[in-house]
Image (cartoon, rainbow, N blue to C red; front, top):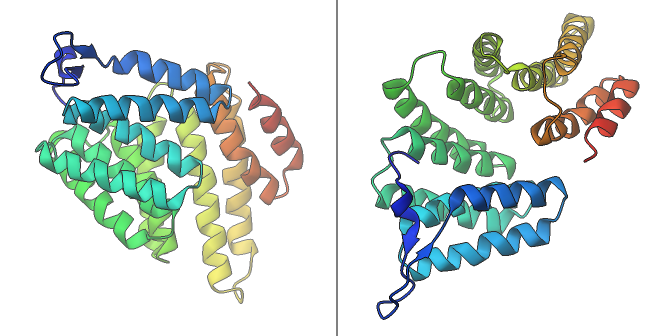
Length: 270
């Protein structure tokens, strides 16, 4: 979050306690990364819940916001709709209570809230939060900032759900343009190309009287570009790389690139 100092994560669990409890968010996130990498999801959830309770007991809203932000993303990935939405709404409330809704950090929490709504079929609510995020980003960031690429990619996904295909295509083009010019942006660029391919397929499915070749050649081009990006020698094969490989594998399989899918699933293994 914006302008958070280390002392923001020092809490006293009760008025009578003399020893403060430090919530070391960097350490917590490192431990969570280890659990996620090993697919130790129960341990990860226990860790988050423990510190949320500590933050609430100490009335430390900033620390709780950081933890709620982590938790809603975890619950979204676990496909737990009710819990994910509940914690997303709590995070959004905290952003407003802390008056962070006009900051980049607060807007990024809104983006994460939007992805929860998008994941569970409420594209309209998602787009509302995406637009709140874009308004703040427009006021505080340069047009080529990496955060815009992530925002546009997510806005495109919601636009596809709403069958606003032209808007989605415009968002993908903007996201790809930004990532092409960012060092280390190959993985996110590859994801955008695969999502762009899915958009073209959705356009075809919306009117199957269309000649598939009108879209098929472009889809195949985007698939091959994504594959080349995932194979760049400069990309570190770290936890995020494994996550992206796992995320992208099924897309290659869907379009008939089964060898690519198999290879990515192998790379996704810890």
